Length: 71
Image (tube, rainbow, N blue to C red; front, side, top):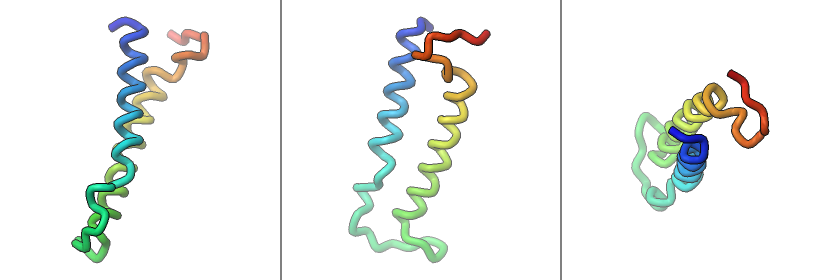
C-alpha cells in the first residue's frame, strides 16, 4: 500500500472513531444492563476499541507526517 493511501486510511479510521464516540443513537434510551445505562456500556466499549486502534497506530504509523522514517 502506498504511503498516501495508508495516510488516508488512518485519517478515515480516526474520523469514524470520532463520529461514533458519542452514542447519539442511544440518547433517550432508558435500558440498563448490569446496573449501568446502555449508552455508558457503549462508551466504555468504544473507548476500549479506540485504545486498541491508537495502539496499532503507534506501532505502525506514528512517524507519518513527521518527516522521519524509522525502519
